[in-house]
Every structure is written in C-alpha cells, then in structure tokens.
Length: 426
Length: 173
Image (cartoon, rainbow over all chains, first blue to last red; front, side, top):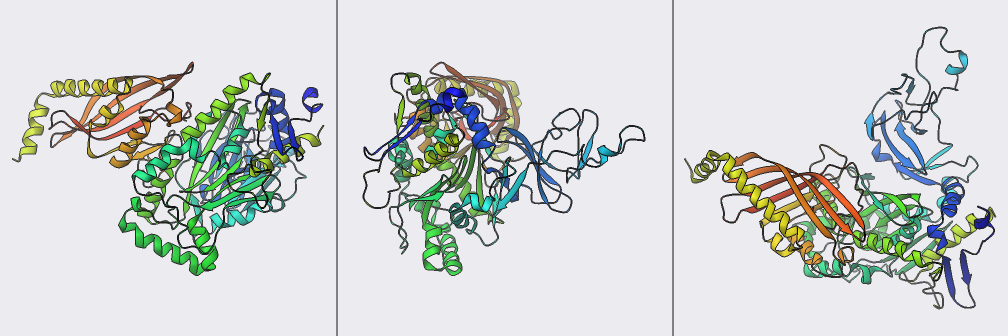
C-alpha cells in the first residue's frame, strides 16, 4: 500500500505535450486491486440489479456484488431490500439458490430463520435466546445504502455517500433514453450471461465505450452485416444528429452515434425481414408521438455506449445490454451481462431483439469474443511492463472543438475519476 | 402405410445398427471440427437447420425467443459463423486454437419419418497459448437418417457447466 500511495503518478495528463498515459501497474498490481476494493468498490454506487428481476412480492435473487454475496429481494409488502448473504449466527450463506420466491429465508445450518425484511423470525423455546435476539442483533445484515433510478438498483457500502441521484449526475438523462423505449417499462430478459475474462476489469470499462477499436477488431461483424445487406449508414431521416461523446460527471461518460446496424426498438434493416418493417415503423411513430420528432428519432435510430463509473455498462446498440463486472484478481474478472427489452414485448419482436443481441454480443456473438481476445492480449502484453510501462490514451487531445466518439476522451473521464479517488487517500 | 413410416420401421428394426451409423456420423463430425474443416462441417447440416447453445445454469429455459442464449443460429447465421471462422480477423481464433471433441453415451431418443432425435454427452478441449479450456455437456441432435450422407437438421449443445468459465464460445463445441 505504501509504495502504491507514495507513487501517485499512475495517471499522467500532460496538456502541453497532449499526452495522457496510464501506468500498466494499474492493471497488474495486487496492491492496486486491494486499494480499489476499499476506495472504489466500497464507496461508489455499484449496480445490483433491475426491478424486473424481482417482479413479485417475496421474489429474490442472489449475486456477488462489490466483493460481497448479496440477497436482492422484495418482501411480502413489495418493499425492495439488499441483504448480506451470511447468517448472523455462524456465517453460513443463508440463501443458496440463484433465485426464487419465499416469504422467509432459513439457514440450513441451525435453522435460524428471517422474514423478507431481514428480521430474525425463529421461535425458539424459552431459555434459548434473550430479548436481544428478537430486537435486531440476530437480523440479516442490510447493505448500508440501497437506492434506485428508473428500475436500476444500486448499493453503496459507504453510509455517508452522496445520493444515487447526485452520483449518477448526467448519466440519468441517458438512462432515461433507455428506460423510455417502451411506455410499459423495460425488463431483463431471461437469465443473464456469466463469463470470465482473464484481464483487468478496467480494460473492459474502457473497451465498452471505445469506438476506436470498432473497425480493426470487428471487421468480421461488419462483413456479416454487409453479407446480409444490413449495413445501413444513413441516420434514418432523423433531424437529430449526434456523433460524439459526453462527459456525464463523476467518471461516467457516453458516446452517441448514428447506427450502422438495425435496432429492435425501431430501426429496420433488410435481414429482419419485410414482415417486421411495418411493425418497427409503428414503434418508431409511437416514439415520435410520445417524445416529438427529435427525441423520438434519437431513441429509434441512434446508438449509445455508456459507462457508469466504475463498473456498469448500459449499451443501447443493436440491442440493449446491461453489463457489470467484478475483479477477483488483477488479471481476472467475472462478467454478468443481461439483455433488456420492453416489458410485455410482442413474441416476434422479443425474438428479433434476442437474435439481434446475439449477432454481436456475448461469448458466442460475432464481436464480443474478439473484444475478450483483445483484452486478454493486452493483459499478456503487460508482462513487458518493466521496459514498456505505459498505456496511451491521448487520441483526440489536440482536436479543436468537441471530441469525436472514436476519440479517447470518454476513457480519460474514467481515468481522471479513478486518479482522483485513488489519489485522495494518499 | 406411408413411405416415411416404412423407413422409420426399417431403421428402427435394426436399432443398434442405426445407432452405430449415427455414432460413425458423430465421430466424423467431431473429426472435422478437430481438424478445423469448418466448411466441411457446415456441409453436414441440412438447409434450414438450426444450431443453439442455451444459457448455462438454467433449466427449462429452452426457447431462444424468450431466453437469452449464447448462440441461437438459424441456417444463414450459422453459414456466416462458419465464414467468420475462416478469416484471420476472427481474432479470438487467430492463431487457431487446437481442439479435441469427445463423444459418449449416444442414444436414439426418438425416431419419426426417418429423422432421429439423438442425445450424447460431450467433452471438448480447446488449447491456446498454454491454457486448456474444457467445455462439457450434452448434445441433442435431430438427424435426417433417410438421406445419404445423413444431415443434421438441428443441433443443440447444452453446457453442463454452471457458468461459462472459458469466457468465450468461439469454437463449435
């Protein structure tokens, strides 16, 4: 820790020389990861899950978040909670299923039982436990802070953190653009994809909002679109035009651009089939009716890749993916990725949405595996860091005017936040 | 009696013989994949065939229209997947990994109109840069045994792992 904190020069921003560099130690050093756990994952708002994953009273899911094992549930009155999944008695994980519906949680080790609000609900006979056990000391541990925005639930382990709303800052406007796809709201579709990438977690944070790598890494995906006659370069007659990035504050950033691909929300391409054309046109008109020409076509036609610091990605591209990732070693992370779709979506459109998702996204997609390969290849290259010790993130620094979406300013937003948080403790 | 029923009866009449022929066919498939003869592998599929890998750790989520799979290819996308894998720009398979496909527990679980529903267990090893990934689970096939050579009408590879430890699914398991 001493060497880490006595050396604040892991992120170097040199405006005079138009250079932005990050030390490769940030990706390899155990001490850095250890500090990140305390300084970043214990203090930032970390994504937990979506309301639609626990739609009914007494629904629950369990998942690892911010290095903890958590229970995300709705109690018998519909109130949402997040508990630390460990029995206050001896520590056993109380809930062992991935998801379910239950009025109570029962630890199998000695039978301690808790209701959906986390209260100790066992009734042992007189003489076993005193009053204390029935007045809080035997309840499930609550996550210190739990807040939501438009059905996206986040936890924070810092009791004194700013509100989620203040933390999300400009990102709220872009969450709205996703949440507004359907009047009925949005929902997570089926189970998510869980997979391991043997690379530092920050490489995926960068990659998820990096347009610069698109053509070199994903040429086979664009070949696929071309082969199907589905590569569209027009902006769909939109009077909204955007191609750039926005610093959303607090390390969050988004890039926005005209889509080269089809979008189930309302951008038709030939491979979807003629029968879907009218359907998508109707969805598009509906959006324009609800939000006006500009915002309506923006939602329909444009793609957005957003990173919410530190580890939540909401990419509204050829489908919507919600993706989060946790490091367990400097060179290894576990990724959880979900598809988000309109609540109560028509069967054929849902099928189209998932089909579109898989053309690019996920471990079996035509693009994500090549991203994974790139990330793992970077991590392997860091073995040479004693001689070649710095990553370059300077693209676009000399540009006059606003940054382009394939510049690297959005990654610089991430790294400035990382630097400020990590440095503040030194 | 229609011709299809007759064929099924003929095929079923020699159940162990049919299973042996299906096993041979599956070993051929495995061999083509081991040797990266990916286009020849694709030729084993009937026009209109599908190829699917459902999500890990889930039971009952068997429809790619309602659940997020890893792979849910129709015939066109499967052809495009194969085309992609022939390119050096399919970076995750460049340089190419080495593979071995093992098959066992082959069973015919249904037979109708000369089309057999077949299940088998599999273990597939993928080696690249000193790392060995292991994929295992169960294949469920629909194989048209009424044509020579046999044609695959559907292949579903149900992973037996509770999550995708190797991270990628870039090879055909």
